Image 1 (tube, rainbow, N blue to C red):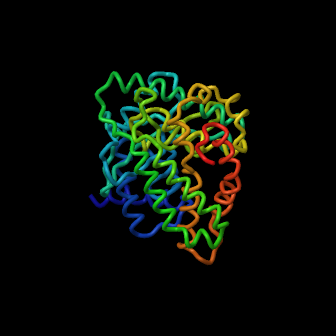
Image 2 (tube, rainbow, N blue to C red; image 1 turned 90 degrees about the vertical axis):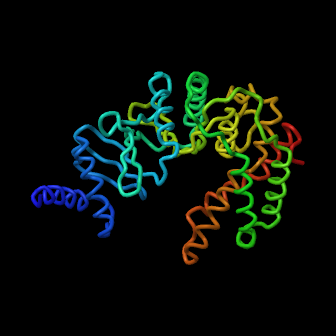
Length: 342
């Protein structure tokens, strides 16, 4: 018994010594159990790299993977089933989930539920600054929605309904709570305008999107959830916010992500992205796009970082400043389209 325990402890000690992270005794005990279970599942770990808390890349005898821990198991089974079904369709580039053993895709260790997914080595950083990435990202998102519609209509998977409106309302409330700090750092008139038009957008926005049939939504189409891998293909990753609803919710998010990088140029936007030309006359889409979700997100991030460490300039300062600098262009773009902002 003592020999078996020693056989487990020593390899884990060596692994943790090679990791680029300072570990406490609690970290060691947790990882000893975790890596021990992985070994039992047939994965011999050569090295690992901790990216964030409960997220790490592991190099094993069966290849490289990403392991991620969740506090709740609620929708994990559904998420894994959806992604693997989409991947098997052959036309959507996603990061597949792999079983630990005997078709067991979830491993419970120390009150956390772990998943094992394919690691995709990046060729370079995917960025909405690049026209190529903006175009390829939208094409992949369209493929995702198209295939997801088939799965959504043909399976009985219990996929949670999107709650975008409630999320946006909560984001606006947080932003208003942060007004005293934000107005000290940035133009108070601009900040007040943003709050005013956020309320106008929410008041006008229909609570239910009825323009297109329901599909499965990704829910977080930020640039860091796209990977241009070494095979030069673009992959969509991180499915924690999967939900069901009309695809325009994802499209609105994507548009708000890319438009600042083309200076809210309507001609370039519609000429380059055919999908948006198809929904150009959907009033719901414009009402949703008028909600400055990106500005509120970055503003709240800036406020949170400012309060955490008042001695250091927040990392989000540059990002929030950039989005604020496009506010007048955003207003003009939306005014020209549907007179939503005047």
